[in-house]
Length: 145
Image (tube, rainbow, N blue to C red; front, side):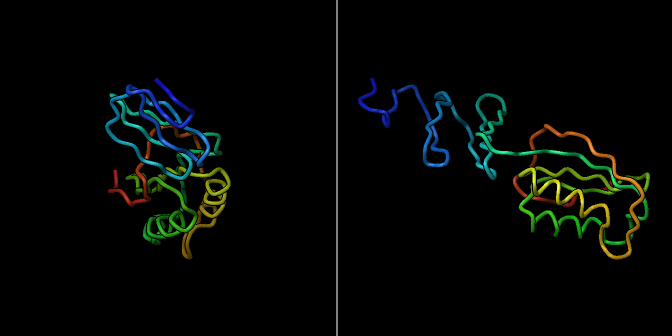
């Protein structure tokens, strides 16, 4: 039984978010991570909860002269500076594919930066699609596929 607003019943498990709200997540939590303003909870299956923030995820395919010009390395460094999560990899067709997840403004900024890329790159096209899958809690370079 609850005595006041800060106490939880025995079967409740909660986490504090932005110091103002307690969220009841059930009693069998396996893993909790906070990535920016998104709380990722493993509770029998992976669940992502967004607490009023403007988190956005996109997958981009960048075409042009984007391989052999350190595009992936540049992407990792730039995404890290913007506080983004996700990954980047070369595709066998000569393009670069990346997933960016984070605050909307940072994702939009990264997309704009990708239009120019690093010195030596010549971007002809960027295809952008929504990406709703969970991503790692950092930004990494993945192997070519």
